Length: 353
Image 1 (spheres, one colour):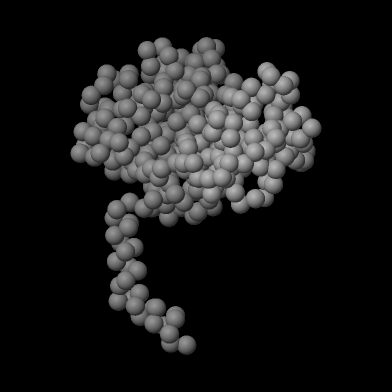
Image 2 (cartoon, one colour; image 1 turned 45 degrees about the vertical axis):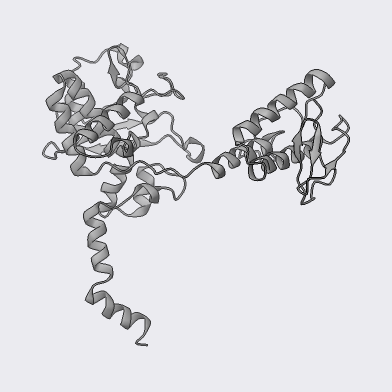
């Protein structure tokens, strides 16, 4: 199959490719010579980007379908003509070296953007609020054997209070357990010691925002055994229950279930099951509800935004999405914004000048 393109890439009549024929928007068939090895790779890539955009927004094709089609076309060109359409793929240059994007990087960016823009809007998982987490922990304690309850309560509280992503404390399909990049039992330190701690320390070896950080993030959590939710106290109980520290801890996942690394899907299922038993819609909650719930608890406690952003290791302003006020806070601020005092203040600030 030959792939045809409009020679004028700036034309408003972007092409639709069907069975070796190019159709403009007005339906008239256009005949154009196929791309050849003499066409500059950057123009080939630009044409593919236009084709992908047209396919999604005019032909209403799924971005994944377009990506697959382009992959087939590039494979065909390589096998039948001996040259790589739009040039061989090369990685992005490092941020320190500067330079232009690698070959096909713009095309990958376009397809990724099309996938995001064409995706149906989905509701983000609701945060698990502090009082809800306390009820979850109570359910876990009452329904599981003591050793499992100790492990799960420690994992849930750590995810909540340290604002962890699921890949940072569990094994996921995209991040299998590796001692070099995953948390192990040996990574957790109690200061000054586990018997009389003031706080817990651990360093995330790999996280989503590594590229934006100059050093690995170290997380400190205070010890407060009187609090119903305290990750340091829960982790202390869990670690003490494992027995004396051994050399094997450096190769052992922080949380294990039946001898294997705890999976994110397991925690996700547990959260949904318990929230369902508490009368909530299970589909509205998941592992990320712990992270957003921790951010919400910090915001409710009056945590400054710059501190909240640092604690959650956010490289952008998206932390504001996660820090959602609890219902009581929303109600209180809703009343406060339209109270008699607010009306008088508004009159004073905006009118009486």
